[in-house]
Length: 116
Image (cartoon, rainbow, N blue to C red; front, side, top):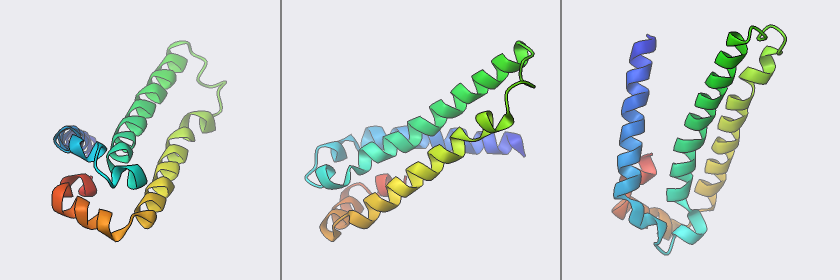
């Protein structure tokens, strides 16, 4: 189960990087100022991945120093869900505030970016 998840995440990560590179023109389009879809895609890809890596390193360091029993588990497990909830709320707000003309523009020119 965990190997399949890792393979799926790796596939998604590679696809997302390719989409962000191919649709980099969306950064400078007229709708980018109001919706910043490309930047949100970048943030939603980089921040959770970096945070997961950092939290994994911190947890490994605590275990290596044999002090992991002195740190409450909530300090290790709470940051990722808070980050995901924050990004989800930001995404909902951005999607709700996007004008129909921008939705049509992204749908016609940068569909993979919208799927991301």
